[in-house]
Amino acid sequence: MRVGMGYDVHRLVDGRPLILGGVTIPHPTGLAGHSDADVLLHALADALLGAAALGDIGAHFPDTDEQWRDADSIDLLEAVGEKVRAEGFRLSNVDATVALQQPKLRPHIEAMRSNVAAALCIDVEQVSVKATTTERLGFVGQEAGAAAYAICALDRA
Image (cartoon, rainbow, N blue to C red):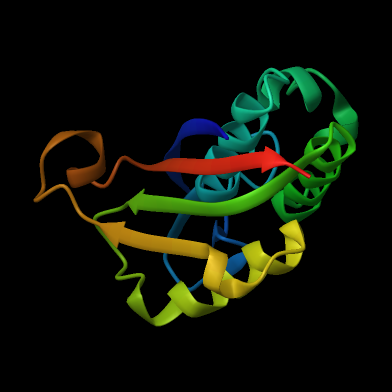
């Protein structure tokens, strides 16, 4: 069994959509980044790549490459899943937490889980997505950004 951990953070800014887990969430600010800045999917991709010892998301989809500008992170996660499977691994489960002060994510969690499961070709029961605030502490609590933490377990197929 192999375990991987991922983490990502992006600033909240005006003029960008808020996309988390492949779901566009109504909010006056969105996440800044070269791609769609989906911190949840980026953290999951890093967890998978880490478990398979394949580097990190920046090595595979560098922000210096215009090919990835405004990329849909669902597509990036699908590509990471394919890379991990090509190395002979099978995904057992993923577990992720999004840290965001506002808006509340509970109404969107099931759609996020479904999107992740579809992108990784696994059952939704293998995907856990949770949300938390930071009780107004730090950059998340001050609504300056969002963070996501993810962990996954792989085994040899």
